[in-house]
Length: 105
Image (cartoon, rainbow, N blue to C red; front, side):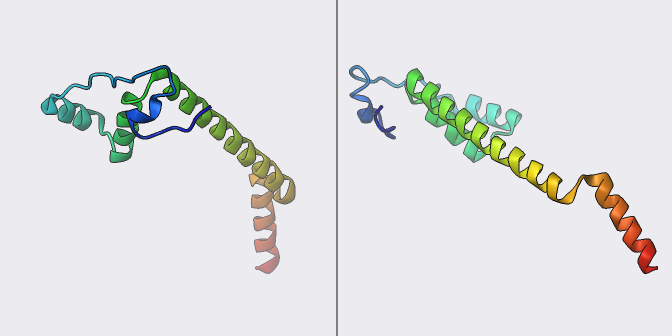
């Protein structure tokens, strides 16, 4: 699989010439949509990126993002399990804090 390029010229290897999908030029419509949906600049950058790429490239990017999320969630769950095993749960920590308070006062 080739690299993902930022320009349509980079898609020559994807079966010929690439024509970007039509994007509405109505600024008033775009601005009202952004205001009504509170789209951040980062979110808008992703929208612009996805709307100017072929569907197969977008699908591959999304699959990669899902795999990265899965990997990171697995790491987070493993760390939470380790922390729970080492320090116990909330109830145990609350009991120990109360016991220490009673011993010191």
